[in-house]
Image (cartoon, rainbow, N blue to C red):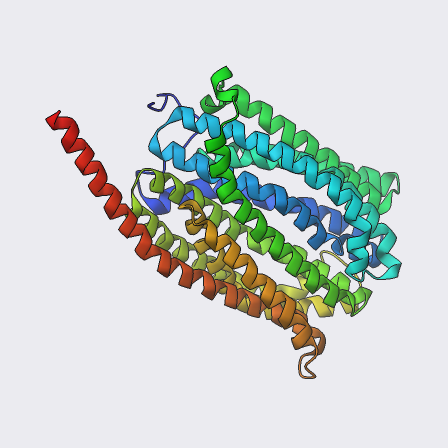
Length: 469
């Protein structure tokens, strides 16, 4: 079935200049991703400045665990988004709508199951991570609130994934901005006015996520043509669920493996005491912001390559990678001197403790040397996800697990590195994962064009047969 003629909330990326399309699509999404990080930044800044360094460490000690629970749900949403973009590229409206509905079924079931297990496992996981006793209680409170909010995060991420797959990166942005402003106001009210401490910051985040997720989903149903569903689209479709799971499960496993490896790293950090945990928390929050342009570019490439792969325009897939690498290198070269020169001032945003500031500043100088390799991971991952390479997601997760489970303990044990081995291990992990991603792309590129050539011949034969008939 042909696409409807009027589509004010979609973008067809199978035609036009790739660089211009990527930038137009990426800018709203980048702003949205930055606002997404403001959730964590606001919590960290308000807790760190108005409650104290130990409270900041308590919030930071839950990061890897929270990421694990969120990742299990978000992978399914991302897998469904890739399938949706591929169906959009073929121009089949019914398949797009079927994928939107069936991904929703999968996301709902996944978030309920994961949220339930997360609540049960919160304390055992914090104990396994050797969370310092003086921050364990606050960490547990913050983590349990985050577990309750998993279903609300899933609602927003589902809506955002579907809209972005259709080329709409603006709508998710509007609701993120609103939610971020609401979160900031609630943080100040619960933490500063009511003195609720870490619990207040967590509660503010959960409420903000609920409102933004519900509002974004309602708006999508009211304004986007592909969300105009009838009864036929509401039927469970095994084929669509299977396609979404085929891509989503490896992505969930990739994110889960990465989060587990981060938990291993967090355990090493916890062994160096509260000051190191606070410094690691501050640098992690900053790096989460640095990740956003790379992540946004990767997500843009995923949609771009998904649509073009669905339209059988594999040459544009390769061109998309080249333009993505160019944009990534430019950003990396800009951020390197910024981190080297202004690292102390950046850490001072979070804390006033001089020991934490000095440690965090040196840590940023180390990790910023590896930003290009971090960028390669996201760019290549976006391209391969877009064309449906589900195997790479699992490979990438395994590589990061191996690196984070071996390098931190080894490097911190070297007398020449000691504590600084924490951040050197982060950089080395980015380097190895980036190299692995690039090698996988080089292998997959040959398959991409072989499949494209074979598919093109098949379509040519079909067309000739139709004309003769």
